[in-house]
Length: 447
Ligand code: UDX
Image 1 (spheres, helix red, strand yellow):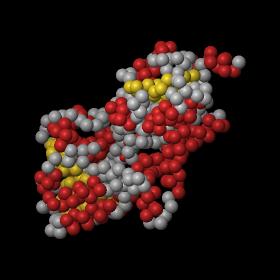
Image 2 (cartoon, rainbow, N blue to C red):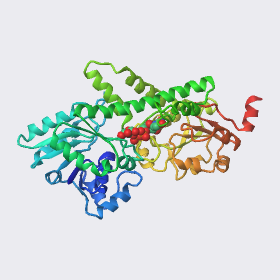
Image 3 (cartoon, helix red, strand yellow):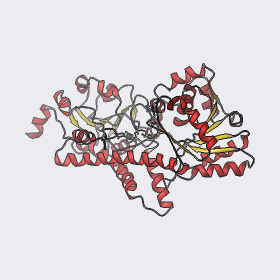
Image 4 (tube, rainbow, N blue to C red):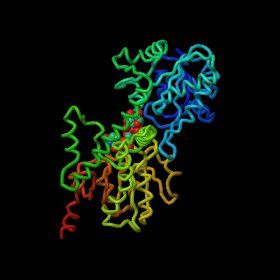
């Protein structure tokens, strides 16, 4: 079967390459010539573990092609995926212009019966609008639309595609349903479940799932704040909660607040959808507001750990991306924390294994970027972990702390056991747990 993927961003490129890996003949289309030429040279425009190798192995099998020629790519396809961006507009509403533009482009090229699948995250009703655009643009076209939302996490996208908890397919045409089930048979044959619903329901599953996960994170973050007030340990609270199978242990990690291109956008779009039909989605709106407020307050923790002022101090920021194992800076907490620390008079030394190129244009030019966490720490009055890159855990803190002016670590990702950090001489502050001060400092502080 011939598959055409329109859009080569995080979703389109990973999905296209994975369909090729499953054995289908895939053509990835993008309007950016520079991006397509880079891909044709074997260069990968995004950081996603394992993606470069997967592209390389499939390019050599002639199953994976890259082109800017949408018309030709659509004409040869049995299934065309729309996987373009749906960024939020100023009101939080999903901007569907790229989805609709892709639909127009597809319509002109439709010849034989074609299944047009929207994989981009789109509000309920969008797939039916895509069908109207296709029909209006090419009244003779034979097609059916399908909603097939993705549940890929950046950093584990290939694993998530190849080992899905479920494949959701919203389809209302038997022929299209048969074709899509054939497309996913290499996965369903291995036991991964495929849930068929009507189209609106499939669109809603995506938003409801992401909004619920965002809610789960906001909940444990708020509980973490309460733990700090009453002397409980949020890590053990999360563990105790998660042992209840109805809750589960995943997505209960406290942190600086959720970021990324999905949770903030999808929660806002769901609330906006509700507003458009006269309903006030209060729980989701509270999650959104709480999360924005939390991100804004993280800098205060660094200032507090530095004795109430960072004026004239140098702070190391370890991790800039919105989460580990990605180069994506979208909605990253570091974009709130760093400006506030600069405003409070601090100088910033930053390090991120993958995100610094994307971060540089988003941050003040006074921020200095360093080639390692150890180098970023040198001469600083405190360090802050914003993103949970594994290398921060592996670093030799006992040795590196001596290069700091003050051995203070504010860990917004609870990467360490507090007592261990105090034992090696750090004043360690984290989320939802009591501070752990180095012995010498504890004596001084209590003197
Ligand atoms: C998310 C969904 O998980 C995925 O199913 C959907 O397709 C796209 O959106 P992604 O945004 O890539 O994936 O990353 P995810 O791992 O979900 O993290 C989202 C945010 O929540 C990050 O800022 C992360 O740091 C934060 N998070 C996640 C927590 O703070 N605590 C957790 O326990 C998990």
